[in-house]
Length: 561
Image (cartoon, rainbow, N blue to C red; front, side, top):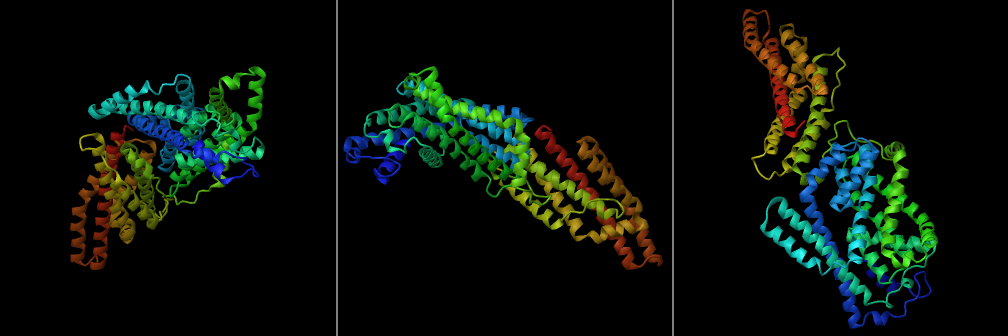
C-alpha cells in the first residue's frame, strides 16, 4: 500500500509542492520496474490473503471461547483491557475484537462501560502481528521455508475435520503471510533509488499529518492495519521511506482501524453507537499522543544507541507502535469512568424502555444470538407483567407499558429469532430455540389479552364473583416478577403452575353459578356475559404466564444460567 501511495504521490505532485520532486517517473514505468511493482503489490495481496485465512482459522478454533471470555472477564477496565489485548493477539484482528464488543453492547450482553476496556486493549494486542513480521519475516526471511507449511495446512483443511481442519487453515494463512512479506521485499528491493523518502511529504508537522492521513487511507482500503504495518516495514527496509515517515504511517493505520467498528454501529442501539464512537475518539487521542512522541522517541534512540535505528529500523518501528499504544492505555485506564460519562453525554439515550438489544453481527454465532433473544424476551416479559399488574389493581403502583411500542419490539424479536440458523437439531441450542419460540408465542398472545381485552380485566377486578380468581392472578403476577428479580426460577415455575391449576378449578363452578344467576333473574344477561368473559381472561392469562415461565426456565437452563 505504501508503494502504491508513493507512485500516486509522484504522479500527482510536482517539485513545487509539499510532496517533493520526482524526476524518475519514466524509469518507474520501464517494463522491469512494472514487474517489480506488480510483485510488491502481489506480495501485499498474499499477506492480506494470509491474514484473512489465518484469522478465519483462529476464529474457528477459538472464536466462541474468545467471545465468552470477552463477556466474562470485563468486570473492570483493567481486566477488560487485558482481555481485549489477549483476544486480539489470538484472533490477529483488532477489528474482530472491537466489532464483537460493539455487537455485545448492542445485544445487551455487555454494558457500554465494560466494553471500553476491550476497545482500549485491542490496540495493544494488534501490535503482536508487527512483532511477528519484524522478528521472523525480516530477520529470518522465512518465505521459502513456509511453502511446505502452507501445503501441510491445505492438506489438513481439505482432508481433516473439526479443530484439526481449522488448525490447518490457520497454519496455511500463517505461512502465506511470510511468503507475501518475501515477495514484497523482493519487489521493493529491486526499486531502490526509484522510490525514495523525498516522494512523501517532508518531515515537518504538516508533512507528518499528511502522512498520517495516507496511513488512514491505506487501512480503509486494505481493511487491515497489520497489512499496512507490514508494507511500511518493507518500504522502510528497502529505503523507500524514512524512519520518521514510517512512524507517521503506522499512526495513521491505527486510526484507520476505527472505520470497521463504526460501520458495525449503523442501525444499532445507543450503547453500540457509543462503543463505536469511543473507539474513534480513543484512536484519535492515541494518534495525537503518538505524533508528539515521534521526536522524543528518535532522540532517545540516537542518545542511547546512535547506530540502532540503522541496524534495527524494523524492530524500532514496531517497538514504537507498541510503546504509544501501551502508554495511551495506561493513561486512559484511570479515567475510564469519566470517559464513559462523557460518551453518555455526547450520545444520549433516545430509545424507548423496550428497545431491543439485538445485533445482526451476533447471528454468525447462534449461541450468542440466542442469548440476545433470551435477554430481550425476559425484558419484554417483565414489562408486560407490570402492565398486567397495573390493570388488575388500580391502587397498586404497577407500570403500564407502551403496548404499541412493545408489540413492535416483540415482532422484531420474532424476526431476529427467525434469522438464527442452527447447524442441526441434535444439540441443546435446538431445544433452547424451540423454548424461545414457544415463549414468544405466548408473549404475543398475552400482549393481545392486554391490548384487546382490557375491559375484561376491569370486569375481573370489579366483580365480586371473580374476586378469588382475581386475587390468585395478582399474587401470581407479583410473585413472578419478584422471583425473576431473584433468579429463583424453580419456585417461579412451581408457583405459576399451581396458580394455573387453582384458577382452572374455579372456572366450571363459576360458569355454572353465573348461568344459574342469569336463569333466576338475579343477574342480567349482559352482566353475566361480561363476568364469563372476565373468567375466560383470567384463565387465559394464568395459562400464558405458566407456559412462559416454564419455557423461559428451560431456555435459561440450556444456556447454562
